[in-house]
Length: 111
Length: 112
Image (cartoon, rainbow over all chains, first blue to last red; front, side, top):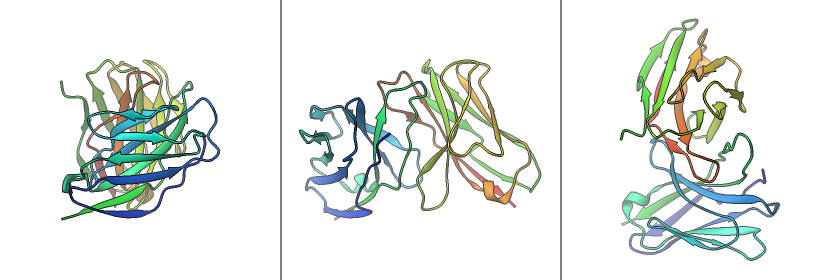
């Protein structure tokens, strides 16, 4: 699976959009981009995933560049409850379908 | 619908003792996984299962064994606990490879 690079930490003002970047320059054509978050020692929570098209659900939007070498997770109106560690993971669908988590981006939403 | 349930939530073991962590899911998911998370670090995959009766090694399998005798349960065993196994253990399940994981709330294990 391709390696991802994320900034270690970010701040965002409450009510503003939080844009979390992820670089995956070695991604291959059959690898998906997944995002999870982990709120203070809880089990991680799946947010969204995509292959090449932009995706949106009730939690967030995922914007993948045309060359697929980077992506951005957008939380449109960040709240204090969005303070968490966000993990960007690139994964090919294979036999095990396992995810390998890095250290992610620690997002702090500031009142 | 309870999702993924891990028992126990907390446990203190003495070095050399054994124990089994239970993960149960009621979503009829095929895939199940055990991870550990050490302070300030990301999750590391211990073992996983792609269906009833199957198991496979992950990144850090040494010192652990697993079994998946029933589709809904995935057991993680520590035969002889060591202080290096002090960690928070998370179980996850997934319906198919198209989806994301559903995680349990974790088991905090301390080995003294």
